[in-house]
Image (cartoon, rainbow, N blue to C red; front, top):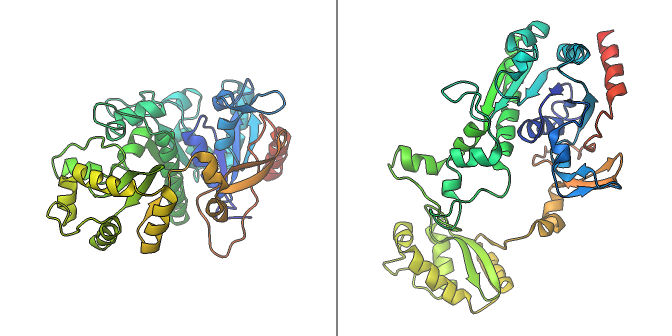
Length: 385
């Protein structure tokens, strides 16, 4: 047993990103994750790219992102043998993760009632596009569709007239995160009740659930938020600013920090336009112009050093390769090395959680399709015996 969930078995019937990400998070916490894939190609994300890697350029880096710490077995869920294998696995599992469209699992012969007949202690995580019920229950949805439908694209981009998707598949990833913490809560409750339950989330719920102050701006304040580019919707100065050789980010969250920034840039902090956050936000365009006029005198390195010395939050805008090369990133366990069956040693993005007093865990590579068929069948036979 390694990790907080070292005695938990997860049956991962999901594919693409939201469900696999949830199952991967549970695997990062030590759970034994058995990923079931169709023998005719497996999880569709195995075919998503570029980039592809490997001797035959047929290994998807997309798939590698969401399937570490898993065992892969193949089964055709529409066949009698495939359904029999799922029944055996359900009986021996603590958690089942699925992100089929509403009704698909029922048609395959595994409605929730049947799952709990096989295993009353089973926790089921079900992730859908827009929810399993309601007027649009069962509607199919992918990440970018959900970003638009859940309002996120209206908040993202240079202006309200140019909505942008978030660069990462944030609806999928947030749904996976919400799903994983829902599973942990259901497992904790099972310790009291002895019974499993169904945990439901969706891409719509995941994005709406992180509206935060954008949500209350409308629900309480009656104001519809809109895209504001690289500057904060409520705080000024807080955003990206041009200096002599590019852009830096400066985040001023209180009046003490503002006075330090103003003194550094030669701006009068008592100027009536800038005296409080309310006034600074009202006159934000003038403030940005005054700050960038001063910042133009030096390069990014100069200003980052000066702001850092004052204790004002500031930073560069890094490319992905720079992030993974950074010593701080690696010091936090955010890069892990695994031994892939074809690629050999490779580096993957690491889990975002660490636990004091625990040594760094050893991670396993995302599996080849059906790599663990024999191993899982042997494990099942031992458990059933």
